[in-house]
Image (cartoon, rainbow, N blue to C red; front, side, top):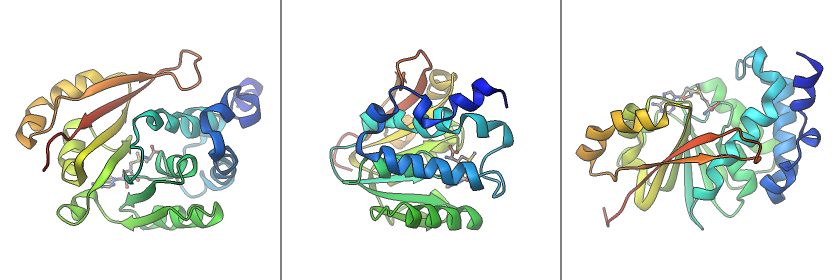
Length: 218
Ligand SMILES: C[S@@+](CC[C@H](N)C(=O)[O-])C[C@H]1O[C@@H](n2cnc3c(N)ncnc32)[C@H](O)[C@@H]1O
């Protein structure tokens, strides 16, 4: 890791971090420290990601914040290391956040993080999103790096409550994935969806959030 990359990864060396994360800043720094110390040995982050954990992972998760509901519940599907769910829970303690993750060792990690950060608004569910169909619905469902949008919509749409939204963090192909998911969205009665380009730090590094809202009463 070069000195520049190392500096890039430090919260204090990233102007604007406190403004973006608000009252959740300290908890997010504590989360970053846990990930930096244990992420690689637990198989949660690759060695090449260690140098950019703060910017590319923790702060990147904040891209979803503008689209969260004013109150209610959020489910983060395929939470893995806790992205974006842990960051959202830290910044929005008024929301209840359910982290859904099938892999046992990741579930153990998420429970440890929630305890270490004293995130009382977090619960962890071990399982696949599909296992919750017909059992639970949320005002927002988030997902980052879990599956192509077409598949992700099938897994998550039944979890979106009326008036709620699926918020999928996507890369450069966001618009193409949304188009490819068109017939699935129509079959499920979902809206067309919109791609938001979010520049979290205002430095030109854009993250794409696909928002698909459930309108109507069902
Ligand atoms: C590439 S990781 C991404 C983790 C995290 N969201 C991130 O951005 O770092 C994908 C995660 O999705 C989980 N996953 C895969 N299929 C799933 C499903 N059907 N329901 C819920 N989680 C799933 C995997 O176990 C894995 O932890």
